[in-house]
Length: 225
Image (cartoon, rainbow, N blue to C red; front, side, top):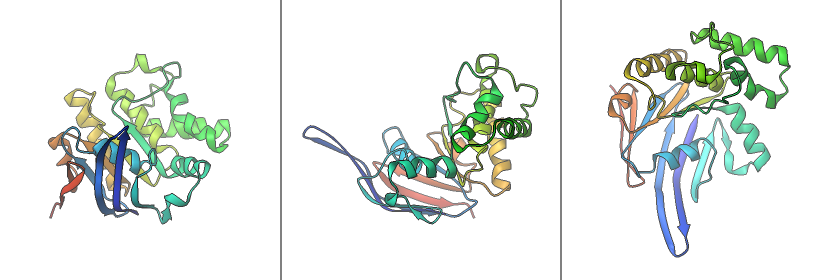
């Protein structure tokens, strides 16, 4: 479902070049749950941005759901990203002035989904994540765990092929973090393809597969037996 071959990323500033990724090659099957882990500066964030089609590699190829993304122009890439990838971030990135249901409905506006259908789907998704009684609360009226549930609902509402989570429990207390990881367990059981980027070994070990990065390279790629 997802295949990277020889992915490189080099950042240049004047005469200085930094190789953030150096020959990254791996594939992810549909329905897999994978954690990508490593210390600060190992290339995790750069890899996440490339997986999420937010950045382009300096070299190598990326196939997502049978499509070579390097063949897409910027408009096609934005459409493809919106349809195929759901993002969950450490900082939630909810719009402060919009209530929960409006935040979740927002991504559907870009695909001409009628307003009534947007609200219906958003309400259903929030209800599924235990937020049915918080539909009209703005982010400041929600706890960290509740905000992350809204963010997960927003990521899922367009039924993406791939779910990318960047330190999804990083801003949560331990109880809320466990609740979010339980949601990932449920999504995995339903066959969702999930990639979690984290520095926390306790989060990573909950995934059946862990890819460890070091200095822009894959140090280990381990599957639980």
